Image (cartoon, rainbow, N blue to C red; front, side, top):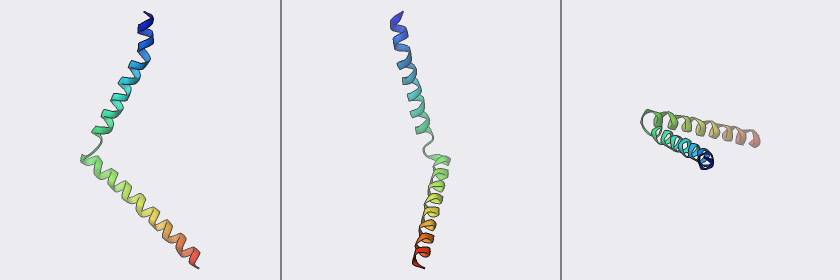
Length: 60
């Protein structure tokens, strides 16, 4: 019985890790890809505008 108790936590972690990887793979592409791309583009644009604002204020 001790071996069952010893193998239970690693087995649960392996199943959870497999579910995590499957979820990550399934969320790639399709409609989600466009949402992720749009979010990344928005963050890049915001960072670029902040950098431009900093350059303008330091140039004055």
